[in-house]
Length: 247
Image (cartoon, rainbow, N blue to C red; front, side, top):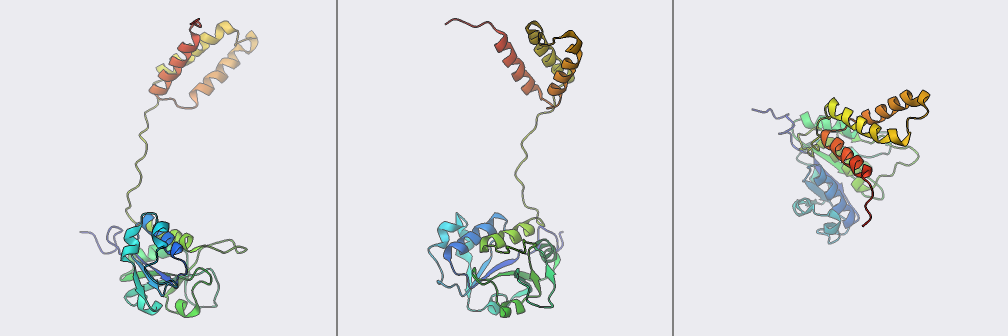
C-alpha cells in the first residue's frame, strides 16, 4: 500500500487566481495547469465576473479546469481548507516569511499533510500585502532583477511544471533506436565507397593516400550507422555508379 506522501497519492496544489483581470489570462492559466496535471482552479473576485467568454478560447481545450473553477469573494475564503499556502511574488515586502523557489515548494507540497494552495495576484499589480499575509511562505522565481515581469500564465506554468516533476506523470515514449550495424557491414560500406573513389584518383597523390583513407574511415565510423542506414547508403552508391541511361 502506498503512503499518503507517495507521488502517486499526494494531493495536487490548488491554483488560486486572486482578482484576475482578463478572461484570456484565466484561460491561458488553465491551459498551463492542465499541461502539467493540475485541474483545481479557484478564482477570487474576477474583475469581469465568471464565467468569462474570453477564457474558453484561450484555454485551448483545458475546458475541464474552467468548468470546475470555483469563485470566492475573498482570498481567505478561497484558501480556508488549505494548510499550506504559498504567495507567488517577485517583490520584496520586508516580510519574515520563508522564501522558496517553485522547485522547493513542489517538494514541500508533495510531502506536507493537508491541502496546498498557490496564490497568484492580479496581472497588473500582483498580490497585495493582505493576500501575502495569509501565506505560510513566499514563492519566488530566480529572475532577471532588471526585468522581473512574468505574465500570469508564465508564472502558473513554472509552478505547475515543478509540481509535475514530483509526480509519476507518463513521459512521451522514446523513439525506438535501431542498434548500430555490425562492423562487417560498416567495412562493406567503406570498401564500396573506396572502390568508387579509386578510379576517380581520389586517393592521389600516393604519399597522402593512407592519411586520406584514414580520414574517410573516421568520417564514416563516427555516426554509428545502423544496418538500415548502411543499406540505404550503399544503395545510393550503387545507383550513382550505374551508367547514365539515355531515355
